[in-house]
Length: 247
Image (spheres, one colour):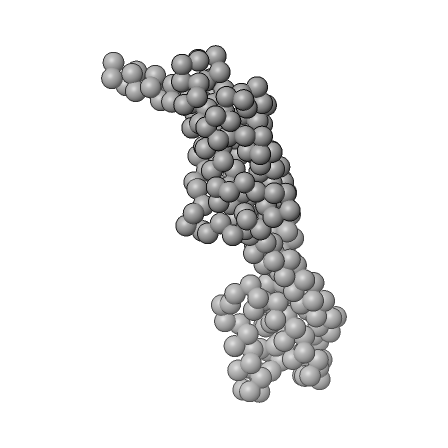
């Protein structure tokens, strides 16, 4: 993973980072990206000195490629997070409608089929507590069961339009649930790739910063560019807080 990458294989390299190799993100990704951009600009002036320890133009080019990869991955992850509430809301709304209709149909069916044990047995199975996918399937089952026994339903003045509504809800809810489930899967993959891209970028940044801190250990004006401003401020805040606690 420390090898210099090319734009053509960077996505594949990132995807191949194993789960146990993914580094914990301890800094907001947007902040990290900005600091990475700052580092890329800063090290341009220092390439001649950095080359003495093996950090060359190729490292700068690689750094910029890894920054772009993480930026794209972060954008995809953020877009996915924004989409989730809308899809979930659509599912919640249609599920509520389906559950209400299901209760109505079951009550009507139980009364209409009260003298038909085999039909009541089917209704009781449908009425059991279930998962989301079962609600979708049960709408279709109830519609078919009602159509197959329409004569019994007609004797109790049942509103036959509810059967069509049940079938339509089954089809619509099936589509929305598929979207929701696919999003959950895709969302996890998007986040994992984002975390892998962060890891891949951090490995190179750590290497460059370590080298920069060594080369410019006696030159504070250049050394500062190889330190994280975010981490420095965070550490300063922690020290001040600790001092106040001790007083």
